[in-house]
Amino acid sequence: MLRRVLPGLLAGAVLAVPAPAQTVDEVIAKSFEARGGLDRLKAVQAIRVTGRMSMGANQASMVVERKRPVRIRVEITVRGERAVQAWDGVTAWGISPMGPGQPEVLPAEAANAMATDADVDGPLVDYQAKGHRIRLLGKEMLEGGDAYKIEVRKKDGAVEVHFLDARSYLTVRIEGRRTIRGTVVEGEILLGNYLEAGGILWPCSIRSGPSGNPEKQTFTVEKVEVDPVLDDARFRMPTASPSRRD
Image (tube, rainbow, N blue to C red; front, top):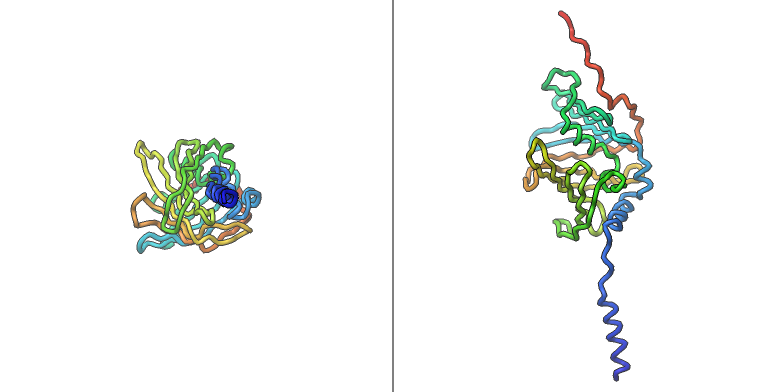
């Protein structure tokens, strides 16, 4: 009788042993694989994303261009008026339709934010080389199911928490906190509707705004171009046009 019982007990004990917990590096490795593979992600040299931005009744067209190593240009057109912000790796500059219509150097805080946004890969790729620190905070139940929580402490002091869907390993939410003019500002980005372009999955629904505020600014991506030809001059601050003389 004992001989028959022991094998059953041993089998039950083996089945009851929990699966080894995944490390943070294992989780983010699966997220890279889910999007198309780390090698493919790192092979991208430039990207252009075109879409519509909306908040309430306000609508605008938007084009975001990024190029390695850290260049970004954002153009927003509202009712025929165009605004530009760009970073060439050294200088952040912008053209505002509400201003003189000439390129102007942006303040240091804007430059820091644009330098972060210019990262083609995002903070999880080669995070150690970038000077970031990350750790796995466990799982949390979101509206769509369980998600892994990864805390990212960036080199510049900003803190983010990335939520990766536990089934797809795609990033579905990012909560961020940074200090602006001495005030701590918290915001969140909701990501969804991933579509393939250039062998990589890209989020095509991006909703952002202050944490806890149901009203979000929405960027709906209509086109993703991988490795378009982008001249470096597009990111450099142009020389202001000379003033006209009457």
